[in-house]
Image (cartoon, rainbow, N blue to C red; front, side, top):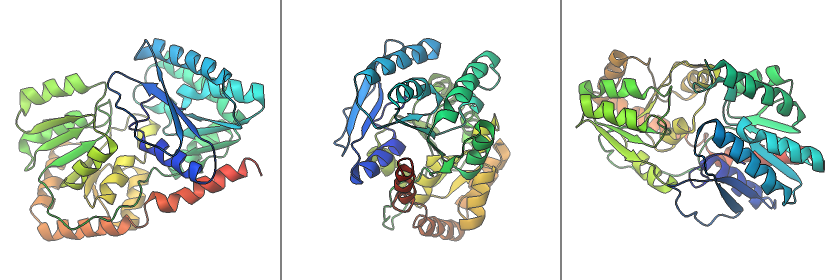
Length: 353
């Protein structure tokens, strides 16, 4: 169960597809929003719940109540909650029916920028986590350091299931000339700094996604770089893949606002790598580990001058750029879902063994 629109949740699509191929009867539950597109044909069932409230405290209350009612009418052997905002109904019904509870932490929920600094909100979610996570029969998350941190905090072992894409062989082609950011336009993603750097960059900036800062970022871009920043809006997974394949440089710089971002291992990093697109990455532990192992990406600080310097250096050195692009394509043979999915299958077998 997730709180977002499952039409664009590629991690859950991969997980459910793999489990369905193993013979599990999967139902993926998400939210129906005003910009939702028709769902493609999946090898598993889907339900999207419509809410009257779209954000804030009232949304979380309404969505959890709707999930509680929805689950009352469903048979299940196991129920998976994705992050804390779906954990309460999962714990309630798994406990009442004595079924298996799975917790999938896409992030360190109480340490995301939207929660850090809001003591009351953070306190509530911490209480939910401390109550619900220890009851889970299986917990997993996206990276090793996050698994260690969550495991120590909630006294439950967390396994690692990285958010890597399916493998796609990329044909050699000339890349387009733009810097691409894909993902939510939310706080802490370094997007204000990227837009501020845009007038000095040798390449235009493309932003693919939507989020809380959409209006603010568009206004900022219009004021300081109207011809250098392009907003692509929310794209389907297929459209996003095409845009990524054509990018010259990917952008994945984060503000160090809480442990969730500091220990993050975002899917966009692997999407850039799969497409053979070198990217700017923050000097955070998980990215540094992969950079040292595979020599992909350019480590960059979230500062205008450093962004400009790193982009210009790569742009002016086509030999180094092509070498890094080939390194990305080689790394993609190891960083893909075909290799990762075996862990998922094994983990789900363990909860009944």
